[in-house]
Image (cartoon, rainbow, N blue to C red; front, side, top):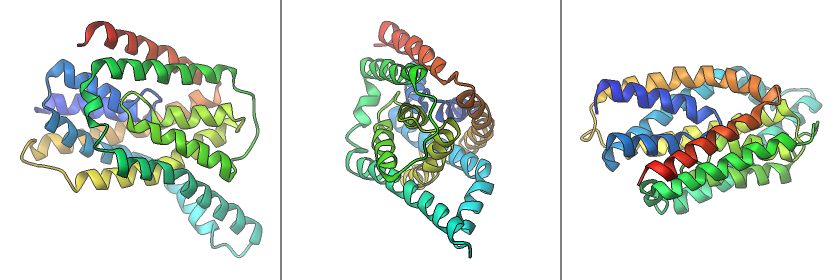
Length: 260
């Protein structure tokens, strides 16, 4: 794995992890095209997730600090509001943790099936396109909705199923306001992404990939991810979120037609 490949994969990770088009699906496609050994892909993907985790923390640092500080505020209303949000994030995170621990290794073989990857891209596209018909809601997230969003987030363990796509998409379909859908999706992403990155890095094998290209990939993923969060926020608020569905359909069809 050379410097150029690491840079490209880092860029792809940073862009597609944040946008609702699945980073794992795109990295799996590049693995096919470049004949990247499975062990190298698994290790590099683990490292690149660290870059997007840092991007999330950097982007939402102010909001995270506000929530934590507010949870211990002397004002009861502010304290209750922020503690409720923390509870919602914990509730929404549980399904992904359970599925990741129980099924993480079981789904690894799916990454080697081009047919399944193509089909999951199509499925992801249908969910994104469905948001075109989402109500113009103004609801806040309650614990039941947080659990539902957490359950659909757990499906992102599959390649070509997007974490941000499923969580924002379902939130919009449930009538949650667009800004809250965006914010809750990424607040939910922080513990999941950071936890997954740490867990995967504990198993990182430096014998299969050099440290220099890994660092380049991590930095590239982090910088690209940060700017993609800005871009996606505008897209969600502008009601054009459903357009990502067309992209996923195009990629899904291309994978089914041209990859074996």
